[in-house]
Length: 248
Image (tube, rainbow, N blue to C red):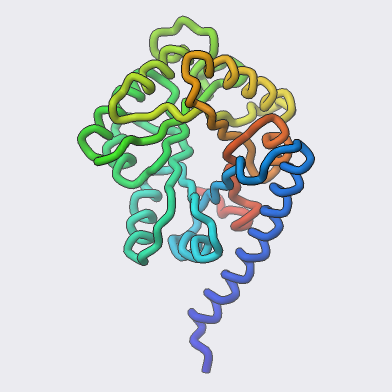
């Protein structure tokens, strides 16, 4: 008699393998349409609300980069995955509170959502105490210039939320490395408009920070547009794992 848990795992693996093949095909086609090298785009599987077992299955299918957006869930999940003997790169992609920095630096390889000088300072201090290697950081950008929804603002002289000031704080930290920028398309904006704006902001940052080449943009519904405008990292959730349950 087949063990039900084994059968369920086998079925789930098959589901994930099919979804992964479809997403990878979309990325290949998008890169071809943009005349870009496929190796220049990293797919991050965002596993929020899904169990560590799904993360382990995805890693077994060749997914090397996993993303989470809530430390309360991510810390335990990363520990479970590590305990299973699986080695992946964890990307923290959600809003980060300063009091969570100490926890996040313990498992994250990349933090995508630093949007203030104060947060960069706190994260740098936590990384210096809690890591033996430099932490890659992307500065989250407010594409529409409204910091109320999160993100540093390009061209702003705000001492805490101005993009140049946040980037300089990250770049000047001995425990952080400025890797690039991240954004989410604002509600009501066409993806083309949002990602074109982000591409321009990223280009404006590089004269002072030439190694900040990463652009984290695009999710399940708009990855093709993001890749057309230079995204180097796409954050894929529902297209891989299915529609998420509503968080309570």
